[in-house]
Amino acid sequence: MIDDFKETFKEVVMAVLPLSVAVLVIILIIGMSSDILMSFVTGVLLVIAGMVFFLMGVKIGMLPLGESIGAELPKHNSVLFIVAVAFLLSFMATLAEPDVRVLSTMINSVSADGISRNVLIFSIACGVGFFVSVSMLRIIYNVPIKYLLTAGYLIVIMLSFLTKPDYIAIAYDAGGVTTGPMTVPVILALGIGTASVLGDKSELSNGFGLIGLASIGPIISVMLMGVFA
Image 1: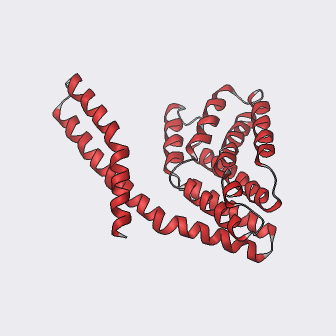
Image 2: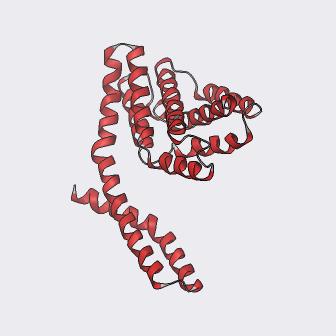
Image 3: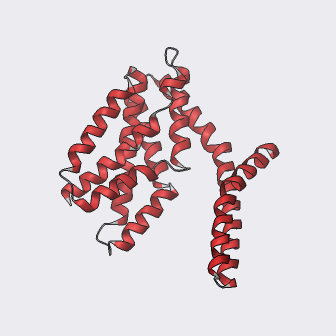
């Protein structure tokens, strides 16, 4: 536990330090007030502390849990049950994803409540849940991922001609924010856990690729919002 904490702390510091130094240099060059400087330093320390504890929680709880659930699902011999659990877990993980919350808040602030924040979050979560369920079916039936990616992005291209322009840019950002620190560990662990108990499935080729597929879901779901809005 102590070794994991030290390693995580080192990783977070190495990730935050370069950006922090760059911003600090800019603040000093511009000559901003000492209050802003102190606020920035305080914020950096809080970010480091928050990320360390968050990542420790992911390593201790989310990753093992996801793999355990993924390993147990095939034992129920029910494809419907596997799909339903995969949808529920990925849906709830997306609702809890900080990046999704940030995106929805920013969109809500610039759209003057023209795009409902809650509807947007729900739509993104549904998109992720649907495509994670499709990914689980891909693992079970050994469908090559290239076919699913091709079909998914063909749908995205077709919808781009039908949806309102404002929603196109939002849709692609929605696909990006789902690859955050909450969603990714759950989805990856779920896929690896499922592939690990299926004897004829490779954990390397079948356990990965779920994030790429999952990111298509929000793009399509938000574009559909633009079509029917």
